[in-house]
Amino acid sequence: MQAYSVEGQLYGLPQYATEVVFWTNTALTEQAGVDIAAIATWDDFLSAVQTLKDAGVTPIVAGGQDKWPLHFYWSYLALREGGPTVVTDAMAGENGGFESEAFIAAGRQFQRLTELEPFQSGYISTTYETASGMFADGAGAFHLMGDWDYLPMRERSTSGEGLPDDRLAILSFPAVAEPVAEGGADATLGGINGWAVSNSAEPEAVQFLAFMMNAENQREAGRQELFIPIAEGSADQMENPFYIEVADHITASSYHQIFLDQFLGASVGATINDISADLAQGVITPEDAAAQVQESWDFR
Image (spheres, rainbow, N blue to C red):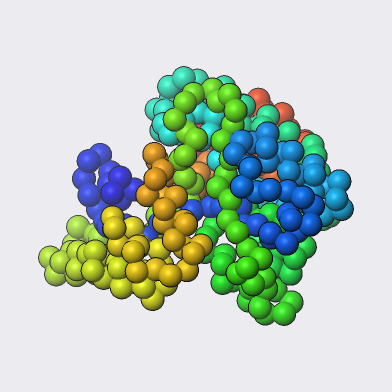
């Protein structure tokens, strides 16, 4: 509800939530001898990336040209390093703002990954749509993307069918071994979609939204796989195992953080996307990246 509230006043209602996960091609991870069930920490993930490279498998497919797919890494790592309040604290100017150690550590952790050269050749000129289809074609073992990509990536594949369910798995973004602050290990990153209501709306508009979003209708939407419902207990009619897993992740999470490139507004969001791409290419330091985000926040 907080996503649709301003200064304690409710202006809308959430309809569904999405989670960013590592989509996994299990045929490739098994070929390389990587046990994804054993990946719990960022160090475990980096080790898996190296194992995949050693086996001649491209570890990760990424759409770097659009930049926002890369911001998922920096954002998730900031949550893992700084805990669930790291973003709101920074917005309030606490603990050094966006130049706090958690955000700098996120950049360092991200560059530990990028120094391994984990992405496909030419990733920085690859769009999200192309990367999505490439993953579905079997071009890499992992693809960090939202649960919404389940059907679109298949449609974008060369065959139009993509990977079958028995070659797919999802992996939650790993925890970091020694975070700057505790509490962010199970936080989820994603979106919250819903409806906002203007102050000129008729009472019937609010009544309709309350009806459309009640548990019974959310449950029906889940049964039809229209979206992953957000009302507590309303995901029990879903059959898709991936959607069920995402629903369980969000239910169990301590905090659900909206994509930072949206949550912080267009100008700051654009800066976050830019610094994420720059970090990935090694043309900026974690400290400079954090400073740029802070400057953008100050002058938003």
